[in-house]
Length: 171
Image (cartoon, rainbow, N blue to C red; front, side):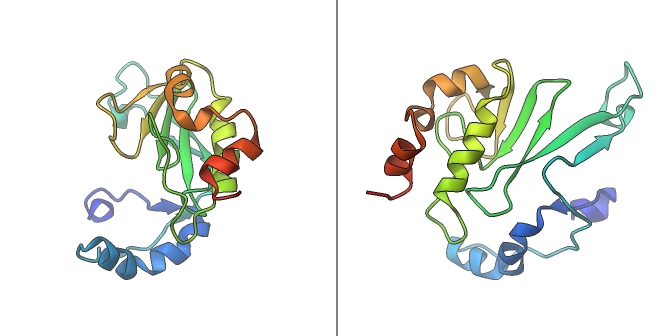
């Protein structure tokens, strides 16, 4: 509906194509109506840059486009991506990172080891980066990377081995 209303392209990492092809299974599992499918216009990859015009986004100070960098952050799904807005120190983390948890890694197609690597990558973002997660599981849904690293239990293990013992089912 959004694509039809705005003409905006639909973007997705191609590693999530299998999940997209089986929306009916997911909807059934969640006991909701299967959403309508649309064509995927752009296959996002790590390092891709998406630019959107500033004026169109309410940026009246300048017509310079805003730059969004795609970070491949698999783990919750094989095609998970996060969107880094470097000029504003903002990260749209989707289901990779929440304020005090992460996206599930026990679902078909998820991978705890990939999640660990993705979290390590995100943890290197500047302390003042504001994280915008895909769900509001905390009264304060967003927070700075420094606050998230300090309070989120997924950053407590000090090695990959410890992390996998806690979150990867190893043992």
